[in-house]
Length: 209
Image (cartoon, rainbow, N blue to C red; front, side, top):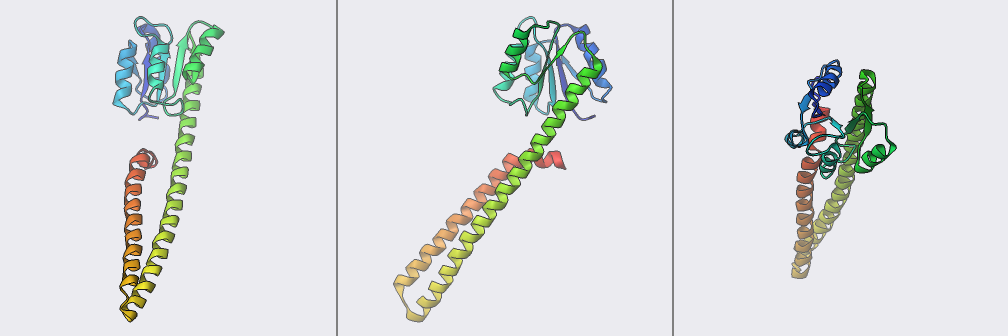
């Protein structure tokens, strides 16, 4: 887990450092942010695996930070674990409604915190594998469809071309031209889909490398 970026957001540096001591046992280098703005800046830089956020902070609250994160990332894409010392069902309900993945109560229990991280990272890994499998299946289906369309149009074109050459039939030559035009359209669609697939699944390929 050495390459995993974990952010701890807490305006109480002592509490943040206590949690970071637990996280360093995982050979990670957690980043401490003293406020929500600092956290959102780190998230904007990308490559964040898990975020711990104190619910009640000066300035932007933990819930406000969570709402901003969820505007861009789903819970499965970027897990957020809320920190609080208040065992209040209303707080839990609000957090989960806003998209929190987990809650950890203070004082921090290292074993619980580490277990929460492993659970979220495992879920993220399974999600990425599922996406990769789904994308591969879609690409294979598209290839099969395009191959059929191309081969079918080519067969028609060559057959019509042979007849046109034998009969010097201009109408048949027009049909051949139309068939070749369909092939050109299909090839263009393949080129566009390949670029799109590479853009959408590039991060998956990097993860599996």
